[in-house]
Image 1 (cartoon, helix red, strand yellow):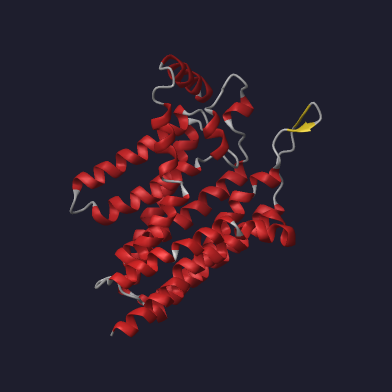
Image 2 (cartoon, rainbow, N blue to C red):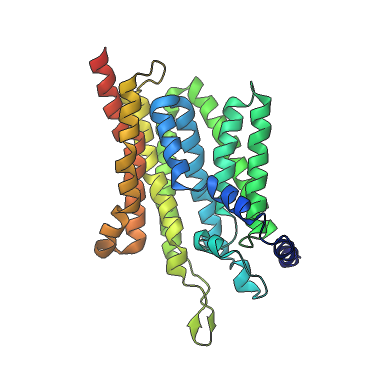
Length: 314
């Protein structure tokens, strides 16, 4: 049934003469691009510290949750399961890892859902717009032929559940600020437990004409990236909450300039550090360490510079 639905969309795509494909590609990548992550960091540093922290907490945690499900279920991509399915070529390039659940849908639900939850109570139109963007992103993954409806729906359910949990955690942190130590400890331990699970569990090893159909080592990279992000995020998040506590209430031009300049090292860590570390520790651990350093840079190192800037201004 799921593959029949994708074949139906494929015929629709062919009949439309690829008219809608560029729009679907744009919607698909909007929530999962490095630019979107950079915008989230900039918002945290220079626009709204509390919302930026909430956004990143939702994003990194739900990313790891979905990756745990991906690497546990090990569901092959639709075109691997049925050669009749021919996804859009550009979409294949960004369809990394196993198929179930959808990572792009998770990104959209985490980012747009955070915006809707934080600002949507006073701006109903914004909440509706964010909900539409989440649904469009999920549909785009089906339309492009890279995910089944189950991939999208389960990812949406997992991420929405995680956002609900985080809203409860933040409510408790408002009442009991010291609870942040337990949150950070649990998050860090879960990141290490996820890596241990990724390394120790078994994976399908199916061969076609003597060639391995899907290489688990390649599939695990997204999982190691997500675990590294969580592992670096929670210590930085705790340090910022307890000892830094920079402000975005009275933003200066200097804070905007610093936040803008800080994006370049962030990009270099994300793009170049894994390449430099791969020869030393292999691609999986290079991805883990790079993402851990990236998350710590965003949540602690740049905020420390902002605090210093604000002390000088005072």
